[in-house]
Image 1 (cartoon, rainbow, N blue to C red):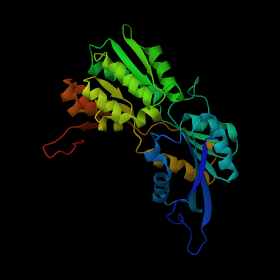
Image 2 (tube, one colour):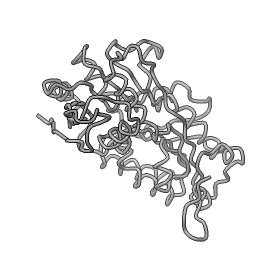
Image 3 (cartoon, rainbow, N blue to C red):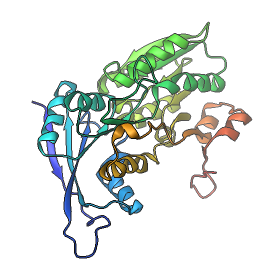
Length: 331
């Protein structure tokens, strides 16, 4: 079975314990999928970031937070990962990603779950979550049509857009469906499905044969892991491309539009803190992204000969431009 469960001790001492009190062990489960790729939320949500956010709040009475980290290589093994964490007696489960959140919800109706998902629930976005679940919905998939509109502003003459997406990722499949349903008249969307790094390379080879096509990249763990390759290729091939997170633009991509992730650890920590203090998830409000980043890489725009409209520059939360000292200027 392709399951990996490990115990990660998060050091740093007791959190806000009275003097002389013995530290109480507070096990918190962390489940992610997949194991073998760097998850796009990993730098923001895994152990240290959440621990640090909890410690900064200084309101938690209880003791040492200990993270029980579980992940699965295959989606069908996520249920067993969650069961293993439950057997370890975790007080709260942090579920990262749509598949992990669904698996956690299917395995327990009692242990509180803090879920970080890329999209609203399929069907009714206002549908209430189960009583033991509180969600941070980053709405990446819902922002797909906005990224497509950004791409049309940067490549106003494009009549064809190639969409690089992973059909095995639930959030990516949801975004592709939204893009297809909201496609402007006269615009052709070409589906470039990628399931592994080899298929990413095949997709880029396809793009090399039609460099006039603009590109939209849909977020999942695979495209995030391949961001340097995709961004470098589109820049070198002089292809106008828009990406879902600012890290793609920082890797050389032309532009990125997506949720601001810096606040995710604090959001997760706030929910964990409230739950450990006695709140039930159903009492807590569902959260969206703390903000949206629009990042424009002017160096790439200049290399591609793309004129960035003044209105986009004014809207940008970050502009990447090499100065005379070689540093990046961010307003």
